[in-house]
Length: 543
Image (cartoon, rainbow, N blue to C red; front, side, top):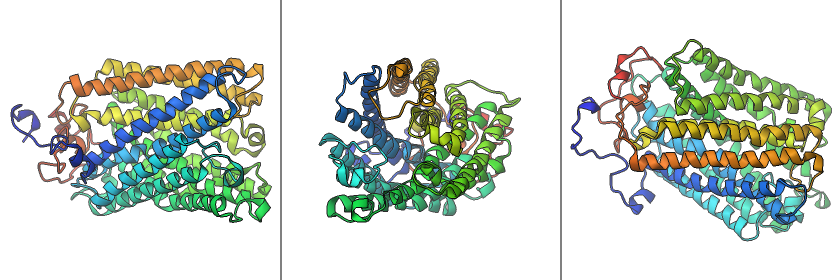
């Protein structure tokens, strides 16, 4: 029965109202509730990381250490990096949107291993709280990379506790990735062939492969740091016969693929939003789908470009440089195909679409500036400068965060059954976009001039750029606050929506209610159309 024809008074049991109690949520194996639990936790972690960034940006507005002491500054930027990378950027889209949407988008009632899914959230929380404990009980001053031998021998901070927290959290990523792989392989609805999968699912699948194969390497590496620091093993400390460069190889073997763990799910979100708001099938669907797998594969072979100035052979560096350029090809395929999809499309500039367009522009800047870091000659000049900071944030914040916000706004009505205020959502998107550029673009200039990163006392020549960055950071924070208020207020005053307020394709829009039923679907699911078929009149029946 069409949802629009159902009486407003008819009782409906959806995942939000089915046994609404704290216990029912904390012990629920419903993938949708677990996604909401991730959303709440990650919002808190993001807020803590943002506060740390605001504090050290205040310090950087002046050229002298007149706001924060040396150790406090080091601990704040380390806390910011660890929280944002390990507890927001890496798990954000898989944890929230992936958990909520993957089963619904393939026509399944839940993930393959529901109890394991709940355990993944508890493991994530255990790791996060352990790391927060390390931050509160004295802090960590090593930087988010935990470089040895400083972290394993000399640092006067809670390295063991923080490393243990990140180690624990890694198991959450591994188990979630394993769950998604099995779910996508074994639980697709009748008719949901591989070439009918939404591109969001392809992105989650590629990300899950990296999680399962790469995360154990980071876990073992951090465990070795804990052993060397706690038990005196000689693994990375040269004074004990260890090799600090070995740590960099192990760390970046995971941490560069981790960049794609962060950004690949965002690519999937962008594909969904562009298809919906240009009313067209994604141009070159097959190329976009397989490019996700290509990025996942090639990503494991480019870690050495982080080590051009770390005693690496120039011949090895040459190979890593070439491979880094190579991984840009499947990424460029996505950019070109998204652009071709927009060409002559019926483009609607909704809030999700504004975030998506912002993503394309900012990620493109991040990707193009990465070419300078992939080139050995320019890398030597730019390594450990603010140019690297700006590049990383254009990829991760300008890319991943914008895609995350696009996806959150796109599927928010589906998750909660409420519409947000479109005007204020657009205002938030615009403020975040301009605030981000004011924050990080000046850092490209300062970095090219030679300002090293992680310094809070600097030459006065760099102060105008740092002042602009600080002003931009608070402008971006204002935009994020507007975004948060807009979404929260929608839960209180927002209008109820039908199944498909955006007239989108996909099972989550055409077969599941808003919010979805406890078991996702109230009728049998059978897929009989290709992905992104906007000529199908059924998508316009219930807005």
